[in-house]
Length: 401
Ligand code: NAD
Ligand code: MG
Image 1: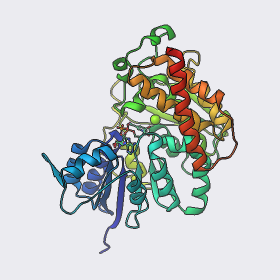
Image 2 (image 1 turned 180 degrees about the vertical axis):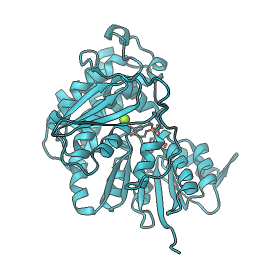
Image 3 (image 1 turned 120 degrees about the vertical axis):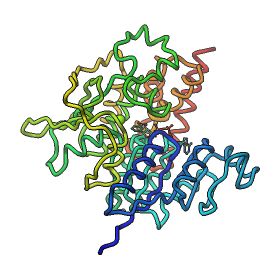
Image 4 (image 1 turned 90 degrees about the vertical axis):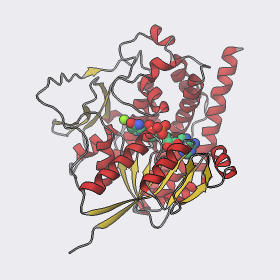
C-alpha cells in the first residue's frame, strides 16, 4: 500500500472570494482525491476577523495570519478571544503583514495560493516564487507590477507558476503540450456596462458598477471588470505568463462567460476551453495540475441553447483595452504605474470622490506623467507605485479645486 502524498497549502487572502472558493475546493479534494492528502497549513485574512476565525475553526490550520495592523490591535487587546471570536488552540495566530512573506516561504508549505487583492499581494507572491513553491496565482497585479522580476526568479528558483485567473487557466489548458501559439484570444464578459454609452457611464453609480452580470467577485476586481481595466491587467498578465508579445493577444466580448479564452495555433486552429462560470474549476486545476480530478462544479448543459456569442470590443467606450495593450507593449515600469493608479482611482470611486469614467483617464494620466524606465528592481517599482497613487490624488485635488 502506498501512502497518499501530501499537499500542504498556504492560502494568502483566504477570506476573499478566491480564498473561500479555494477552501471549498480543498475540502472537495479531501473527499474525492485518494492520491493526495490535502492539508490547509496556513491562512491569512486582512480585516474580516470573524470569517478568518470561522475558516480556522473549520480547517484547523497550523498558522493563521491576521495581516491588518488595526484589526490585529483589536484582536491583541481582546486576547485570543474577543467577544464570540476564538481561534482553535492548535492554530498559531500571528499578526502583521510581514508574516505573509514568512508563511509564503514556510518550509512545510509546498503550495501557495496567492489570493490577496492588488499590489498588497506582491511581496508574499514574489517570496513564494523565490522559495521555489508551487504558486497558484490569482493575484494578477503581481505580474502587472513586476512581471520581469517574477520571470527572472522563476528561471532560477524551480517554482511552478499556475494561473488561477479563468482566462489564463483556459489558455494554459488549451496550450497543453503545444508549440508557441500564433495568437491568444482573451474573452471578456463586457461587464455591467457592455451596452452603455460613454455618456451613460459618466453617471454610473457604485451599485450599478458592482452588478456584474456573470461573476461574483471581490469589490476591486468587480469595478475593474466594469471599466475593463481587468481585461487590461489580463493582457499584461498573459504576456508574462505565456511569453507572447502584445501583438499576439486579442480581446473579444463574450457575454455568457462560458468560453473562458482561446488559443490560435500556427496552422490556424482555434482551441477554446468552455465551462460554466465558476472559479472553483480553475482553482482546482491549478492545485491538481497536471492531473484532472473529479470536479465539484456544474457541467455544461448541452441540452439547453447556450447561445454563445463573440463580439468585437469597442475601444472607444472602453479605452482601458488600448491602455492594456500599450502597457504590455512597452513593459518596464509602465505596469507598476498603471496598476497603482488604477487601485487608487478605484478606491476614490468607491468613496464617491470621482466618477466612474474618471478611473481610466487617471491611469492614462499617471502613465503619461511618469518617467519610463525599461528595467527596475522591486524597490524601485514599489517607489513608483507610491508615486502613482500620490499623482492620482493630486490630480483629483486639482480637478475639484
Ligand atoms: P477579495 O476582495 O474578495 O479578497 C481579497 C483578499 O485579500 C481577502 O482575504 C482580504 O482579506 C485580503 N486583503 C485585502 N487587502 C489586503 C492587504 N492590504 N494585505 C493583505 N491582505 C489583504 O478579492 P478576490 O475577488 O478574491 O480577488 C483576489 C485576487 O484574485 C485579485 O488579484 C483578483 O484580481 C484575482 N482574481 C479574482 C477572481 C474572482 O473571481 N474573485 C477571478 C480572477 C482573478
Ligand atoms: Mg479573469
